[in-house]
Image (cartoon, rainbow, N blue to C red; front, side, top):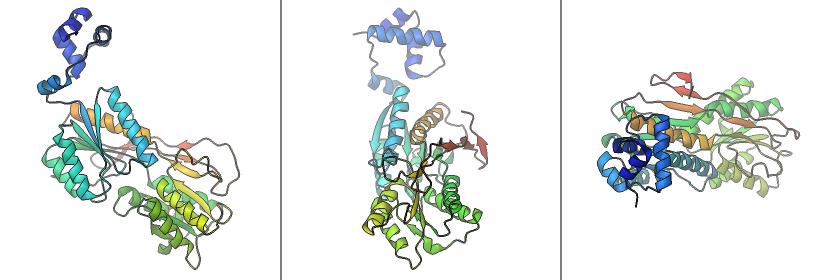
Length: 363
């Protein structure tokens, strides 16, 4: 079995250089790094991960805690996290917090006890215990999809965040429907307490204001980010004395629930009610009619979370960063527009500084 000394001899470098290449502990010139990697490949050298972790205090593993892994949106985020982690030589330990604060705290502790180098978490609506645990144990973390307000003293400098834009894309859906002549536009909103829910409600209200339409609280019902909740919320909206003529659903699961509610009442989209949804998914293009949607860059969210975490591990004292990635407007026919071929539209990603200002992200 090849040893690190064999690799060093074959590459014409020192054992220390081989160690730096394997552990990313010091910059190595590209041609030297490639020579080491070529020698590793040729000799079939396999690093002793356990021994290396004892020396470096690193396990080269990342803990990932996301709820509803069966949801296609989070599945794609998981794929982005996994691909980026493997690219950088990290393994992944995965847990589902079920969007429950107590269970979230428990699974994060279990991941920490397995000595992961850092955490990537989609936080629940009440992440106080999560923040307290990670801050107390100085665990580097990245929050994805949902933005968390981190108070001073909770280890704020340890935590970076990455998510998609939520408010402006929701405004775009509402103004699009208003431009088609709709004056009663309902919203099936997500779970209360989540930043995505707050921001999409803000975008909904901005869209109404931009179109000169009044806000009617009866046209906003929470679907709790689940299919069953989306079905109940849509049913409540359709039961109003004057129901909406158009509907915006705030995630893919609630879109499925809303479509069930419409089917049970024998209502057709877009003939009886126009529909636009937040979240595009693989079969949205297969529905009849095809779903007009906001597509989130889910895989890029996952990949960016990994890169932020690795940058944090390399520079623990750098300022915390919040990165917002653009969404794309996917124009199909459920909104009532005729079939046409149009490219998706999106803006540039932004990065939020520790002071809260947004800057263009040049990465």
